[in-house]
Image 1 (cartoon, rainbow, N blue to C red):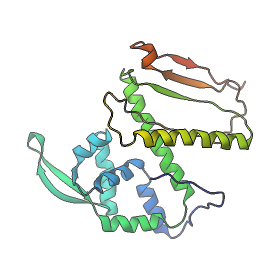
Image 2: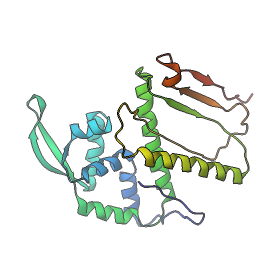
Image 3: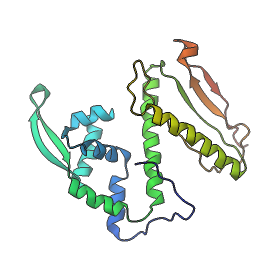
Image 4: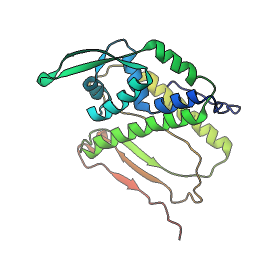
Length: 229
């Protein structure tokens, strides 16, 4: 999904007919949209190849592939000999059916769908990154954390725009650049409303900079959120 800017007058798409709701439900998972993005390059892929690209198990990929096949946007292309004498299936995208699905997805601005889709991708990036770090590969620079503040709306908007400007510039600089000894990283970001009634002790942060710390254990800086008594 590209960068989408919601406007103050953005309204949810109508809840009818039933077909668009079903399409959004079936395609709502970010992994399925990612699979479609891979297959739309007109190169058939096996379940094993998709798993390698997505860094997912074969069983997990099979679950999402089956849903896409049932929906009709992915079809069996052919088979070929695989490792250990097994026969592997090659899958491809059905562009005609995919265009039909996109037409239904574009029937209005479904704010809930886009929120769920974007948050799910951020969650997937978090899951992937945390698994790498938990495996002991601490040579990657990282920053993880959150806090709650109560600030004027105008200041929140200003902060959001400043952060997005820097993040967008960083992405444009390195999105297509092949760098030697480069660190592959995911950048997730959010400024969201909160129901927290207290912000003073809400800062929790964990960071590591290999350029400063060498091969030492990653430094931990945390402040526990105060629990209500």
